[in-house]
Amino acid sequence: MAEEFVQLALKLGAEQAKIISPQSVVTAQWVRWKCQYGCEYFNRCLTCPPFSPTPSQTREMLAPYQQGILFSSSQSFTVRYLAGALEREVFLAGYYATFALGAGPCHLCEECDPNKPCLHPYQARPSMEACGIDVFATVRNNGLALEVLRETKEPGKYFGLLLLE
Image (cartoon, rainbow, N blue to C red; front, top):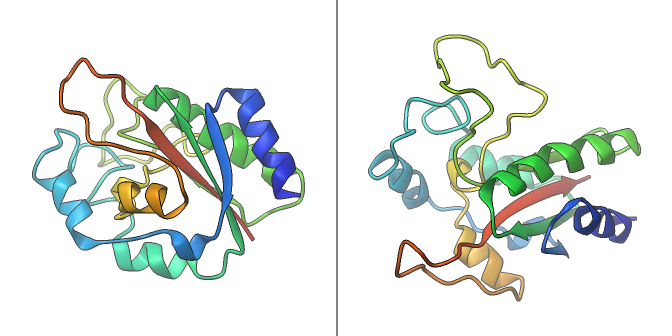
């Protein structure tokens, strides 16, 4: 059944999609520190730290899942769109515990007010990195390529993760 969702991800705009084991997902405390000391959205967006799950909460959450789908795009907003769209379709197919993680900060609102409830709770999802996932190690563990961008004009590659029970 997961292969059907890989095809759906590709149909919806993913450039790559691959079935993975959630046990291949690497979490690390330093990832959230990169958010705290280097990202303007820290403490300003409900899908970002300190509001997003910690690495230990993420490890605990990953444990019961049997499969995941790692998917990518050259645009972070496409990964965020795919996370919400895939989670909805997979949920409607009967996988009620499915959950998706996107890439980068959420931009569903012009400005997020972390003192108020999210205005888009059905679409907003934290990024893999906001949850303490080492995206580079996870991607490489699963046979896909991801390199550090050395120039701001280099095209990026962004990843999301869909979890299936």
